[in-house]
Image (cartoon, rainbow, N blue to C red; front, side):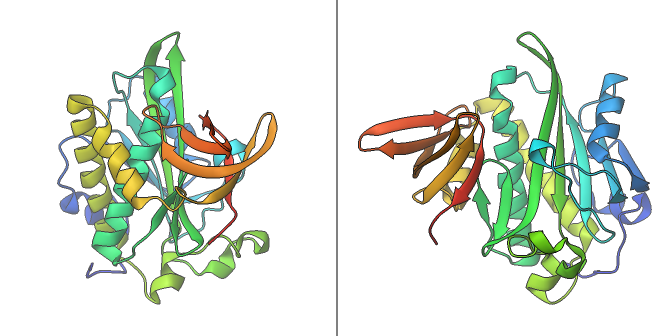
Length: 268
């Protein structure tokens, strides 16, 4: 458990906690920003190095998947990390799974929360979403120039600050724990675990990431509805594909792999 729930994410509070080699070493902290992803992409376009980290206390135009707004009040952890992996653009979804696995481990280590992973990019504690990941990339043909992984964690603010339509499905660490977490400690742990998975994946492949995702999954084995470009599809989520897609049994003996889509879990 962390010891200083009142600590801020300023460089003075955060950098002494950081034990990574690359992730977060180029650290950009802002009290307010439109979108950490947008700023990180701008930095990457201008040559920002891998591991460049943008953190803001609040976002006025935070974004989730499918162009949705991401509510980002003070007290959360709103960040974007620039990565330049030697990876084909088609395999970029693996980086989303990797970040989710690392965040799940950090929440267990630092907050004692046994969270689960919902494909493709959500972290749930109980049945409440506490974090999400938005991965964006720039590529030219089969060359991935860079990838920006945006992560939002609903940390030290009450759930009543979330819009009413979200409160049934989304929660905050503060409400779940009944106390605030030490945000710089949690962020430092997350980056260290994230960097470890990332380094091993580049050296040895993504098998460890996929296995960790399977072990932490709250999606596999469940009856789901996946909303796709061709409409909703119902089936049972069976496994994760080597490229990061979700393998679903959509009928007796019929297996389909989905690379994108919005998942609704239909059973507890």
